[in-house]
Image (cartoon, rainbow, N blue to C red; front, side, top):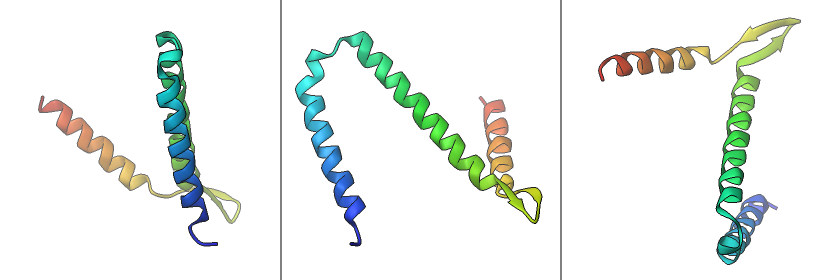
Length: 85
């Protein structure tokens, strides 16, 4: 069925949001901070893994890189913007 993943994700977000509103005062601040940091690190690793899986490709027995031009442009742009501050 088309869109079943979207529907399941929407329901999960609504249920998770409801549980979060209900338990917000029941979780200590230090645990909230630890959970937020753990989720941030997880998102970082998932993003890096997704990026690298598209950049490093085995083709005909050789390791090739794709999509590195966008990364180069990003770092060059960031460097020149940093120097302007």
